[in-house]
Length: 184
Image (cartoon, rainbow, N blue to C red; front, side):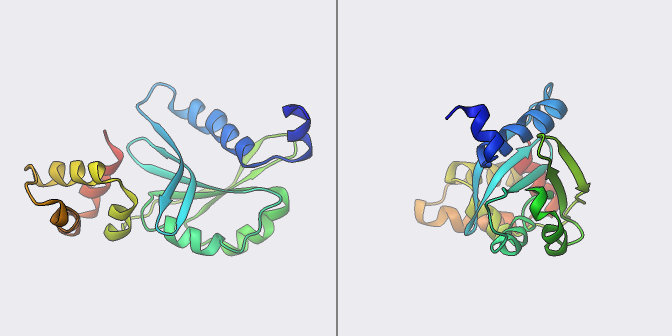
């Protein structure tokens, strides 16, 4: 089966991700230092696609064959660390996605012809769950951020590094922490 035939019959997650990359990332961030991350672990969930460029935007994909069973928990989790959260879904899910999503979560609809239509705009989240954030990062990432925020090199033992970094995260204003996470 050819790729073109397969996407006519079923537009899977791979198709959605490529469409978001083409129509949102490349269109809006071509001359910037933006980064796209696929399948980012956040707590017990994975964000399908995240674009970071001075702020973080999460895109959770729901294809026509997906269920919406996990969506409320996914949104609740993603809302705790990303600046904005969007659900990108097929036409058959729009009505239910709009019922499920809180006011601040945006929604994109994927048409049969491959167009992304913004149905509801996402608004910025102000807070951040520091514990969830640090547990979603790799050790070298949270150490780098903690050192950047605190202004000093950490000299703690391997056993104490996570705790020391978490303490720095917890004592930092949300805006400083978010800024350190989304900027290189």
